[in-house]
Image 1: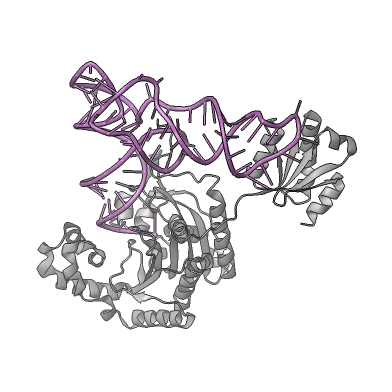
Image 2: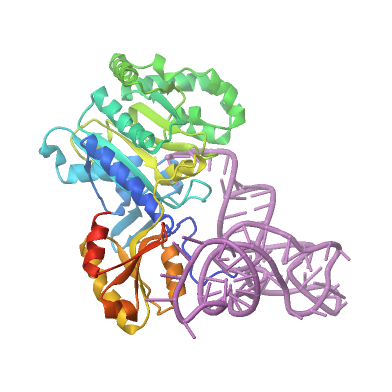
Length: 420
RNA sequence: GAGCUCGUAGCUCAGUUGGUUAGAGCGCUAGGUUGUGGCCCUAGAGGCCGUGGGUUCAAAUCCCAUCGGGCUCCCCA
């Protein structure tokens, strides 16, 4: 087919009318479950200062080094947000949300942007929902975050997933571990992949995440961080696991789970699904006790998750889960002649005031075409109006499903419709 | 950034070894029923065969390039 003159940007997709109802349904579920957990919604701008994202997420991460959309205007450096943890923390610090007292329990829904090559489950503009608890280092916060995340999937009916869990330690534990890891890898470094060699000095833990075949043998027997956690991190991790057990949330310990953003400390987790193919991460998150301070706030512990909404949609399709009902309208006015059209136009508001949805033909089409349209719109009732009806003051109310018709005054029609 | 693969109507796809005006189903519009949807029948609209170039008497079909989609790697949601 010939390409239209204007198209959306690569990897940025329209959510069309046939799709939007399920997005709304998903958003409603997220709002409801977040409310049950007593989280409050936060909405931040689509664009942030580039420096915030670079500092927050880490200069050397893939997201920052090759996936951000950034541009300059005057003296300002704009970046389309690639994730929302750093912006939420920025907002927390900027508006002194700690002064509201207690720990802040925030959640969000919205579009994110990463300049990647699109494929299934990966777009340049995509949507995430997520939640953050800022101001608590209690393992209860970690577990509540995970529970909220899981609850959304459970509510939708997606249960076929794996929760991977790890602790990446606090800075002290991590330094000790990195040293041990470097000592272990150094003798074989020249045999490992280029990517891994690059990561060796700056971020050796990411090597554990490598999928390169030549690295696997070395990774398999590498020292694991759990052996290097100090007392405090060890205890925190133990409690997280214990609370998850108490809640009956299954998880798999994955000592090689290292997530893509530099800010994570201690708890790290990822939710993967076998229904997604290559991009199998449904959601991920963890604790980031250093980020608030990194961004300029007081040292403040925090934990959160982010979940991909397109991937959730894909999982729903694979599992034949329908999030939204078929479209429908309560009343469709079918008219014959100008007087009838005018009657319909002026009586639409009365039906709508009664709390029902109502529509009519906008194209002056034949009765048959109007009936067909009513059917296509999945109308529950058609009100048929012609000269006879107007003369009598009684109109044909057709139940489209039952194919039954009554001749009633408009008042009777309204009271009958109000009852169903 | 790298690899594989595909690009014919709004959608899903046919199109034989290159050979007259490029097809089907669904959808859309209208008619069969001058006041009645879903089923059925009929007709119509809708395609520079992704784009550009080349080979040829002749290209949707062969070659090259390019753009776009899908999948994979990397990484992530």
